[in-house]
Image 1: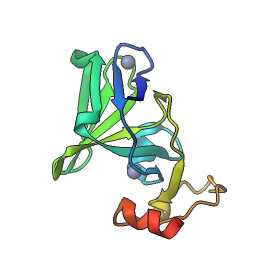
Image 2: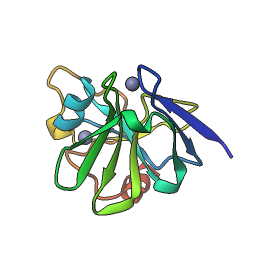
Image 3: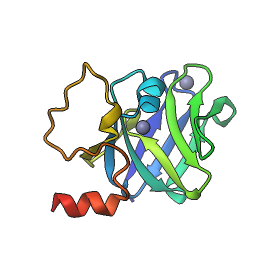
Image 4: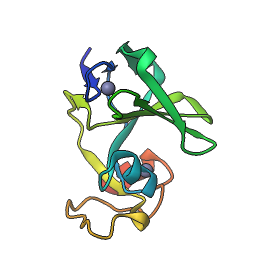
Length: 143
Ligand SMILES: [Zn+2]
Ligand SMILES: [Zn+2]
């Protein structure tokens, strides 16, 4: 099975993702912008069984960004890595930035109502002011 490799900046935290990513969204919400220090976070959801931590478990630190969402990052180098969700324990949200071997492309821009004022979205993809509701809904719109 195809695998994607991810690692943090200091390379102590390494992980692998098997199988296919869910729909890739560029998230422009202010939390993603702050967490990544970037205009948006390219992210996808996967099943927890697809995610395997290879090394650095003891270096992972967490931050609860809301009642529902826990963000994982490397406490040595600060790289922002993945998210887990209280209401969806079988899902992991992964950032595409640290991954090698990604074949998927972004399908939409989400939370554009809170995008950085200085950043212009020019990719021609659908834009959603908030969460589009579901990945399926975006995929149907794109057909
Ligand atoms: Zn690190
Ligand atoms: Zn976001």
